[in-house]
Image (cartoon, rainbow, N blue to C red; front, side):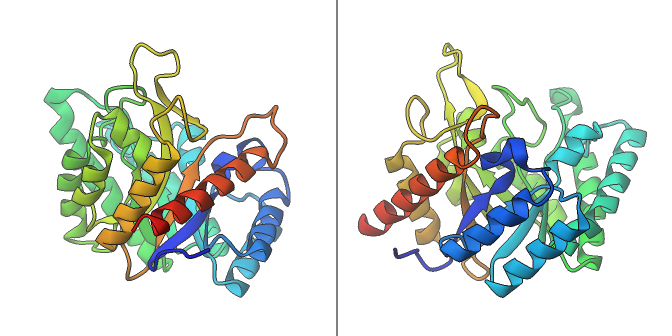
Length: 302
């Protein structure tokens, strides 16, 4: 299979293997299998509690030239952290807890560590929230740089489901520019579901964010507000959501044409969340086959 130059098929393990991601040895075994299969050039993981597993992940990814990114979303959720809150005490604690989590990410071989933000405080306090966001991310960028890593951040939806401060792409880019003025490697993790739920033209927003985007999640959502499935539910690709194979291929082709992050490689993953009742490989297999088909269609459509 031909993969467009500059794009890296990426395996989003905390989603496709969500129910088992903290089982001792499980994630390391899946990464070893993915490395053997040879399709994935990037893996995205959450916190790995066991030192033995961290060392195994680092070794296999180094041996197979696979990029590692670590999402600290689970730490944020479990510890009830908020990097954009107007509460100075909570924000300071959030930054310190996440700083302490970074060395484990580096032990896995991660070159990127990723974060999400907190709730929208409302129009009147939004600017102050963005000031807090800039302050938090600047501190985390410094700590990450000291460990030899970069930072990326994922804007979420503002209106439909997550209702977060950092959401609409045009607003996010203004705040990102402030951070990148001092920390030029700070990047945006673009999620198609959140952009769509923010009622954006997803391809146009991806183009708008081309200079700062360092990661692409092809994530599905139902966009009809009257539908019970409306919102960010990390659903499988395809109907009834907007992310059909054709749309996924279009977005891959857009990223390739715009040469987004082509100098370092753009990880592209399917975001679909496994259920505990599924067989452990079910969601990962669906995501892999869909991503392969989307790459194939994006290539042949040129």
